[in-house]
Length: 227
Image 1 (cartoon, helix red, strand yellow):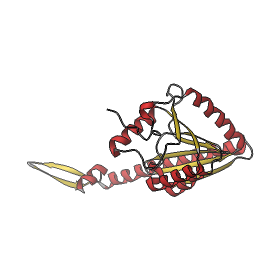
Image 2: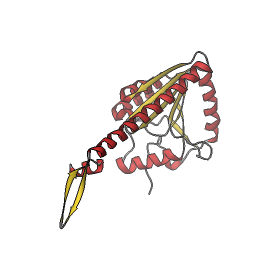
Image 3: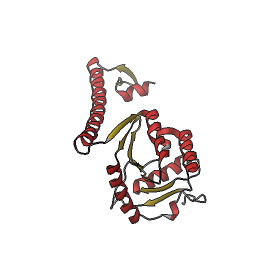
Image 4: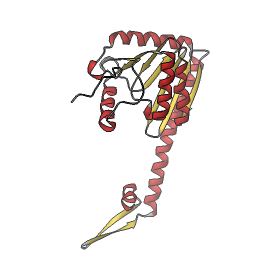
């Protein structure tokens, strides 16, 4: 408990001969700590507001007829990600992390079962950061995420071509962006056929440039981490 207070800067050690004691910091120091936290929270809110305004400006000023929906928190992301099960035809996606990190293992399994039932066809692109993420997952958890992902067709593309640092889902007339950083979780869903068609074309070009990596093919039920 004391160490937590020291880490937070609320109390401090006072060195004495052959022993040491602690005392609360001065009131002005605590006020500075509070202000620092306020500034951090304000910066996060401002960044989200800037991001939201940019998307709103994009939708209202450049392409008429765009519908933009924002989602916050775990429950909001569950709703947005579940919409992917509405996909008709090819489901295109860019992967950076697992859905498990956002919506949990149980809900991810529900999505997995729904996609299997629909016999969904998937084209997933990922780059170097995703490989590091998967390797770290295996080291910390020791096994692949639950579910049958044998239908999930994925290809690697070098970061020299494109650096994939977020999850993006493209299906029907929808483009969905997922963002999470520790407890800050939100997503944006853009609905417009012209915008979606353009993004599908870009994805298809990159897909042709991508390649299978056999030693990291999670769709293969016999896959095992080497080394």
